Image 1 (tube, rainbow, N blue to C red):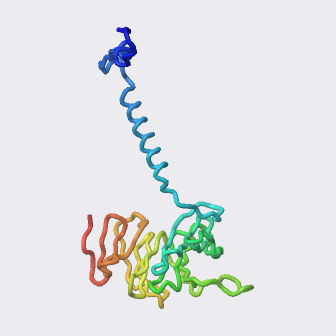
Image 2 (image 1 turned 120 degrees about the vertical axis):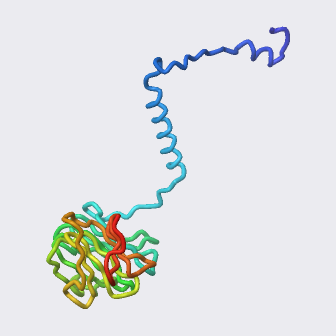
Image 3 (image 1 turned 90 degrees about the vertical axis):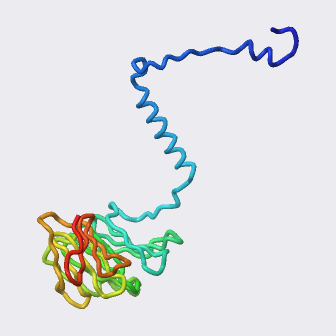
Length: 224
């Protein structure tokens, strides 16, 4: 086998045959091990793909809601569990301004179609309108309009074209921005409604969570 410098002959000399028994009873943790290996491989693949772009520091408590500007992609508004609202410039990853908006959680934030104002709702049962541009130097941050709701508010969504917005909580209510009382009220059962939004295409349709679609002009379209 080793008569000359033939590498093929030398490599054969070191071959070792490994016998493996595939009996499942001898490998009780094979499935968990394979699952762990697959999970680790997926995590490493995502890490190497570098999906993380950046972070925005500033909130002292957890972020409870986000609102995206309808025209300027780099502008963002965030609300936190301590009632603070912050506006951000994503392009520069910079906090533009911050202020105390509510007593308790900021439950929802949305922009008016023009993008000049945004609206927040909180645990204090108030709906507040804020200018996107901050106050002048030395002036206090004050909402341009405040509406006191009779029920708990958990989310808010603004109509894409019309001056209408919807809030949800104990009830689902449709508001006209110049009025202090809802123009329509919907309620399904006794459970709280945690999310509601207007359909961006069929603008007269409103979706509540994953269970109901409501036509704000006539009545219920579907319930699933």
